[in-house]
Amino acid sequence: MMKKLLFLMFICFSLTSACSNDAANSSNSNDQIVNENLNNLSDQTKDNEEENNVKEKEKNKEIDETKSNDPVENVKEETNEDINGEANESEALELEQETHHLILYFSDRDLMDTYRIKKEVEINVGDDLEKIAIGEWLKGPDHEELSGWVYSGVIVEYIEEVDGVAHVSLSKEILKTSMGSSGESMFATQIAMIMEQFGYAQTQVLVEGKVLESLFGHVYSGEPFFANEPDDFLWIDEKDSREITMKNDAFKIYEPAADSEVKGEIVVRGLARVYEGTVSYEFEDGHYILDEGFTTASAGGPGWGEFEIVIELDDVVDYSGRVILFEESAKDGSKLHELIIPVYVIE
Image 1 (cartoon, rainbow, N blue to C red):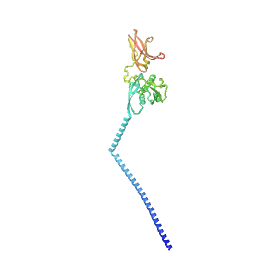
Image 2: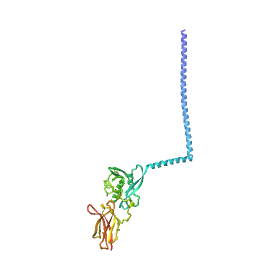
Image 3: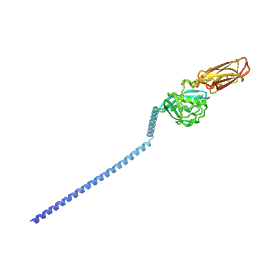
Image 4: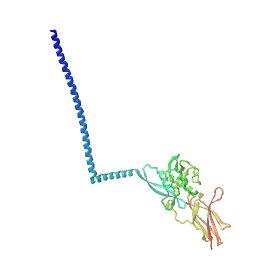
């Protein structure tokens, strides 16, 4: 009886184990199938997405090709680009450009005097107007009666304020400029006057950032140049149109002309640029001084002042004489800037 019972229990256990194994195997198989399906679905989705992307690209390409072959569409696009480009450029110019009026100083063609002119310039907002003013001066004047003599390759390196003094640094090409003592004096006056309009009473000129004792060998440049009053200089349209018959650095003579015939008196009229406006003169016949004296011009140097001298003649006629104009040296009384005007005295 016991044996039968054990046999039945064995049979039941075997059947239960078999069923459990089948269920497990079935579950594993189902999981594998699900995973495979999910993988297949993912692959199919990717394939569909790639196919759709290819179709979309081909469609866009066809649309672009159609537009490019359509002359109306091309004209529209080009027109819109041109309009937008011009509008942007116009707005940029309106925002960036501004007009300024500068006062520049130049000598006449004979290097006898300095005149001032107005110049209108268009500059970008934020540009250094002081640097532009010196640059325009270095270029030279446009006026036919004025002259510029600075070497054309000169560059304005920088301008800065140092203790209230304008420091203007020029490139080394400035040293190639050739000018005499009067020209160098005008150079100093003109650059100082240009900076005066920006509020500087003194201007120090430097070469590549260094102060030199002399730029051209005549005028000391180791210290700043002082500006004069703007009204000391005529505007170019105020320039005297009278003909100058003789001249040098200190005198410009309107009359008499050299070798003129005179009778009764000699009238000398002209302009002088001398210390305190004092014009000294002598009249001699080649052997003796027949008359001498001085007069005072309407302005002293470095500006030009008008003067007039009247020399009364005696009864002696038919001889050659000379009027000698000069500036008397304050140091030793010697004659400076002599100008000789030969005349012939007649009855």
